[in-house]
Amino acid sequence: MHCIITGAARGIGRAIARRLAQDSLTRDKAPAAMLLSDQHASELEVLAEELRANGHHITCFAGDMSDPEVPARMVAAAVDAFKTIDVVISNAGYAVGNSFMDFKLEDWDRNFAVHTRGAWLLAKASHQYLKATRGNMLITASISGSNATPALGAYSPSKAATLMFAKQLAVEWGPDGIRVNALSPGLVHTDGSNVVFADPEVKALRASKIPLRRVADPQDMANVVSFIVGPDAAYVSGADIVVDGGLVNTLMPNLGMSNNWNGKVTG
Image (cartoon, rainbow, N blue to C red; front, side):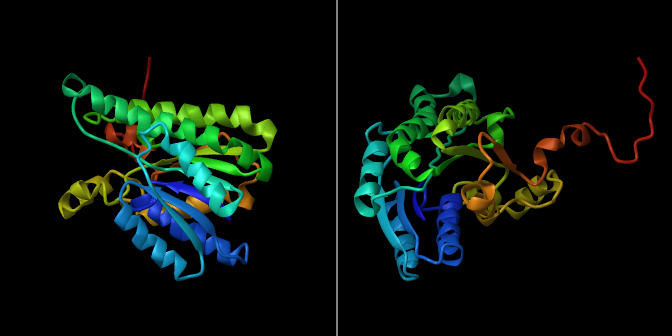
């Protein structure tokens, strides 16, 4: 496997890197060749050393996906190191909370720059290599992209745009043999969300709203990504893979409906 993973130093990206490295050894019988990118260079290097110790070929790229020059430079670095690219995972994320009335212009622009424009520029730079390998691209969206999430300002709108970008790209690139899918995580306890989930009571309350009654771990996302980018998903493209423990289906229960409701509805 020859892949690029952005936002790889922490959370979901780190779990994906570890899982795909494992897949390469067990499924492909060869070490993985990965370009791992993140702003957190020191943490990225720690992960890289861990994977190199298991025989994998790792290139680190410290960069900010809101910089329009970074995606093309990242792809060039991967091609220089590995000559080819099979999988591109656009996972870098950004979030800052506030109401729309108090939201800052620079935070609005950064959300779209990282999530949507960054994914687009990464895709453009990768296209010829993915076409040559009939590879695939995975873009991390969110259930917030299809469900309004108050107090996160531009996060939900930018993730909605990212989700539609993935679907449109799948249509345009399908004839080139390239699959494109989106991953929409629900509530996941990561380094970024630890500010919320470090409080056991808050975590338990959030978990109580999820049908599976637990907040996800990054490994839950990585396990699904393993399938999406692997050969068993060869006919999956343009999909929004929702991995949320059933959370998005809880509107009616949260309105007070229950499994033993025996009332009648008329009119």
